[in-house]
Each structure stands twice: as structure tokens, then as C-alpha cells.
Figure 1 (cartoon, helix red, strand yellow):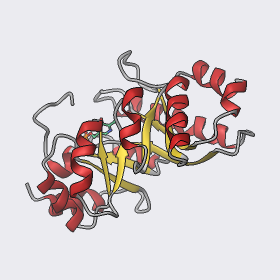
Figure 2 (spheres, protein in one colour; figure 1 turned 180 degrees about the vertical axis):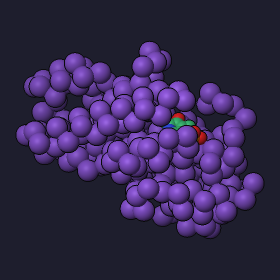
Figure 3 (spheres, helix red, strand yellow; figure 1 turned 90 degrees about the horizontal axis):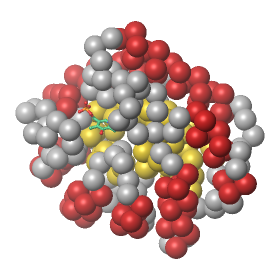
Length: 226
Ligand SMILES: *Cc1c(COP(=O)(O)O)cnc(C)c1O
């Protein structure tokens, strides 16, 4: 697997050269991360706390770690001191727990709210009603140690490009609508995390600011569902 060549291919095919690239290195060995780092990558995405914990001390200090998977409340504390961005915050309860851990170490923790845009039931994320309930609740205003930097979403697993485009477009519209609203000062929306190996070009055409790309860089994973 020529990681450097793959990275060049991926970057060459970007529809927006300013879009940030998160190299999704879950399940991949340290040597693969080091190869990507040597090729200039600083942002790495992982979906298991244990795996981030194992890899983080082995990588250079300027590596930026992105938690892109479903995060369990009891594991926040292990990544709170250094995590660059938590992409998958999908409930108010989890946001409150992240705030709590941030308070303990006096570090406002950067997060994205994951929005459910796919047709599959199984994909995590807020639906519009849950989001509205949270944003208009008094408790939401009491948060102090989170920084909500944007939204994240995953399109349906389908060959239908039009459907994928429609889902990304909907997320972008929601993002623009929220930006116009008066929200607490810890909400500063400037990132829209959408797009993976199969759909990052469509996502960029629809306004993505960061794409999360794994298999197109590191090759197929042994555990497709991980
Ligand atoms: C695994 C994963 C990716 C990367 O998927 P690829 O298809 O390998 O690019 C992106 N986002 C999330 C949330 C993931 O879990």
C-alpha cells in the first residue's frame, strides 16, 4: 500500500483544495500513520478511545486527533486532555458529560454535533426535533467547557449519488440556518464534517469543510464494520 501515492491521488481529486483532510486510521498499524505523517498529514481520525490512547503517545506531538466514532460517556476522560475535535456528539446527555470532563481539567473541548441525515435507522445523530429541543433548553445555556464548532453527518450507504447529494445539501442548509441564529457564545459554527472515501467529492461540492477519508488512503480495513 503506497500511502503517499494514495494521498496525492486523493488530494488531486479534491473539488475544494481548501477542504481539510482527516486521515481515518482506525484499525491501521502505527507504521501506516507514520507514513501518512511523513507525507504531511497531521489530522488523524479514530473511532475507538482505546486505540487513540495507544497510538497518541507514539506519534509526534503536533499530531491532531479526531474522535469520529460513537463515544461512550465513561471514556471521555481518557481523551479530554488532548483531543482536537470530537465529531460524533449525538445527544445532549453526551454533551453534558463532555462539558463536565472539560471543567475538571479546565479545557473547553471542541466538538461537532452529529446530525442524522441518512435514511438508515442505525446511523447515530440528532434528528431536527432533538436538536431544537436541546438548543432551546435552559440547561444548554449553562454549558461552559465545550466549544461547538460545527456539524457532522454521514450520508446513506447507497449507490444513488442524487440521494447522497440531497442529504449533504440538507445538512449544509441546516448549518447555514444555525449560523444565522443567536446561540450561546460557546457555539461558533465554522466546520462542516461530511464526506468519506466513497462520497467526499459530492460532499465538497455541497460545502464540506472537512472530509474523513480512510480506505482511499490506507486501503480496505480488515473489519468493514469497524
Ligand atoms: C470509518 C469512518 C470513515 C472513513 O471511511 P472510509 O470509507 O474508509 O473513508 C469516516 N467517517 C466515519 C465516521 C467513520 O467511522
